[in-house]
Length: 253
Image 1 (spheres, rainbow, N blue to C red):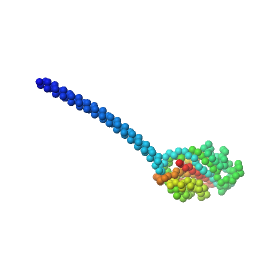
Image 2: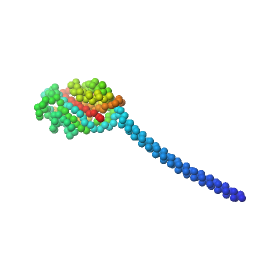
Image 3: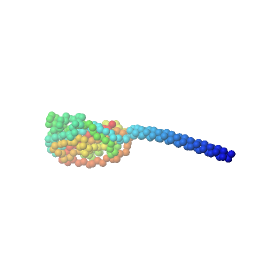
Image 4: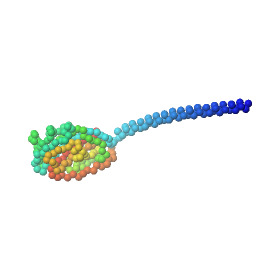
């Protein structure tokens, strides 16, 4: 009788242990399923967050991105020798030209006066500058520059162009060309690409060699709201001897 009771107790214990083991297995399976679902949800939420962040970044007012390559517009070259001089001007990457006046054909050859007036040796026409435009200008992201309200664009350019060495006449012509596009924007991101950048994009080969070369290309982008940028440090340019001046610009859209 005792042995039969012990055997019965052992059977009960075995059943209990089997149930516990089964519950443990079910628990492990449920836990694994829960973790898999949770991980899938987390991955989905992370993907949604990344997509939302990218969308917000691309639409954020005033964000500067890697804006790409654009046309550099209205570069105009002025020549100021110390006396009447025959001058040859050649562009180093003429294959990038989209327009020019006088028509560029392996170079320009002019007779230049001290006041900057020119005579085209090929046509005999009187000129005051040499004009060109070029494609694939490298308007890349740059955290340096200025943020200028559209209504303040004229006074801003007057100040900065004078610092960079342009005369009032040269600055006047540059401002007249670009001001309507700057004033239509609530704000503008502006920076100035100077000699080093312009020489890399479109080298100027001038003979006789000038004493002073001032190249200014304004890169700008219209903004709906102001943004924070590190102020660009601009040099104070002085004109000495035979001076060459060039201004132009590129709008990033």
